[in-house]
Every structure is written in structure tokens, then in C-alpha cells.
Image (tube, rainbow, N blue to C red; front, side, top):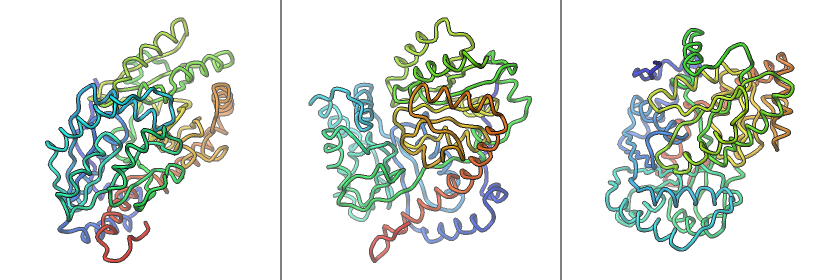
Length: 415
């Protein structure tokens, strides 16, 4: 079986990709942070883009000499059921929110506030699950607090947002992934887009033999074009809509569909969605539904993306969609919904194709499958765009600049 490698990329490994000046700048900024401890806190160490980014960011910042730690709050299934409802509600989905949901959230917050040690001079708190940690602020008078929002809160359920905003406004600053996501707040807001690590197991180059080994493991043939969506089994990722779009494509192109997902500890809906997807694909030829365990996830996802003819991301709502970033980095033609942070990555007809419905997704996939030269040209443009804007060195730079700005004696500076 294909397993993840243990070796972590070193800073000098990135010089061939981003240049030596970029690495020198990171070293200079790290020196400016000497004596400051940074702490990141989220709700899971595996599954989802937040955990993936922190897995890459933490070792590189430590190599830079930054004193940095990553901690995870603890919650029970009842709590994660509530925070999943909050997540959906923030994206505008009409889940029923009752008073008991807020009580469960506050009861768990009281527990994790008691058991989570705040160690940082600067604390980055990610997403709604641990947001109530700000209640420790009055005990930590010199600590600077930053709330990092990874979801699209442009049109939220107002009751849920008002509940969370009471915590957000206690922070010294907040970070959003897109200008569209910002909200009226009394505290400063920053725009920092997520990023990928080009040298991680999920994004590094793979040999033809390694890719074929993964395809063979899952019974996927190279004889037919492969259309792939990589994402959690989540209603907002619309895997059922992907299946419907593929059925329309299949009438004209003898292709295969690969749905690739994993599980996250803080996402209790995954099993239910996966069951519905399996039910929906009964009797549909050439559909592969994969649930890849974390110990094999990165290399195998990398291989499946690289083997694909087209990558699709048909989300109904989206934070940023690092799966799109990964695919574009691999020179793959991408069809994706025009939601969340995806339009920041894909300029329609230049670096990929945007869609708005099932029929549109099918049409755009066929466009790529029937026009390989067109697909190759847009894929090349997409990779250049990702290299310039969405690699991890840029993310680390902006995190350090924000951290420094919070201790600036004048007004908070703009990134």
C-alpha cells in the first residue's frame, strides 16, 4: 500500500519554486517575531483544509525560528452536531436552530475554556467551534487574539451569526478568505486567502508508476477519461449534483467518475451523505466512490488528481476550496461552482471554467473532454495563477505580518 512519507520539506526546498528572496524575507520577518509565542487552536488535527494548512505551516515556521504551537479543543458528538448545524446556517442553509443548540454549545465551551491552556502572545482561533475561547481574554491581558474564519458568512442565518458575533467582537482582529465574506464588525478585519504546500504529499510530483499503483488499487482504468471531485461527503459539496452532472456527460463521453473523500472528527454528517451518494449511484456505470483513510489520504488523493482528465468542484457553498487550488497546481483543467473563494482562483475561460447548475457543470466538463488543447491551455494558466498567489510561503508571510501588526504601537497596519 502507498503510505505518506515522514520527511518534511525544508525551507530551502522551496527556493526553486518561489525564489531565494521570498525565503530571505520570511527569515527576516521571523527575526522580528523573536520573543513572541504564536498559538493556533482549532477543532481537529485531521480532515479538512484547516488541519491540512496547519500541518504544513507549523513545521516551516518552527524552522524559521518562530515559537509556535497548535492545540485542538475537545468536544463530544452532540457538540459537533450543533457546530455542523451552525456551519450550515452560516452558509445560509435552512437548518432548524433551537435554543437547546446554543445551550449545548455554551456548555461545551465552558469545558474547553477550562481545559485548553492559552500559551500564546498571539492566539489564532479557527472557525466557530473554539470561538468562545475569547472568554479567557480578561485573564490574559497581554495576549492578542485573532479569529480566523474559513467559511462563507456573506449571507448567514442571522440568529447564529449574532450569537457568534458577540464573541468575534471580543477579538483584536479577524481574518476572512474573501472580501465577500466580511461582516460589519467593530474590530479590524484582514483578508488572507488560504494556500497549499507545493511540496506536501498531496501536491508533490509523483511517478507514473506510483499513480498507476493507486489507480490499480481502486480498480480505475486509464482507458477512459477520469472526472474527479475531491471533498468531504458534505451536502454543501453537492456530491449528488456531481453524479447528476456526470450522468449527462456520460451520454456523450464514455468517461469515469471518481468521488474521493475522507472523514473529519468535527463533521458528523459525512456518513449520512456518503450513504445517499451510494444510493444515488446504484446502476450508474463507471462510478468509483472512495473513502480514503487519513494514513493514505494525501498520496492517494495526489495520484487520483494527477490521473484525472478533469477535476470538478460543484460546491453549493464554499469557504475557499483548496481542492481547486491543488488541482490547478497540478496543471489540471477545473470546472467549479462560482461560489465562495473559487472565483478568486478561477477566472472563467482563462484559468478554468465556472458553472452555476448541474446542466452547466455537465456542459463545461464536456467542453474540456472534447477539447484537450483548450483544457491544457486553461490548466497552464491556472497553475501560473496559483504559483503567484496561493502557495504556503505567501500564507506564512501574511500570518507573520499580521502578528507583528498587532504589537505595532501605532494603528494596525494593512497587509
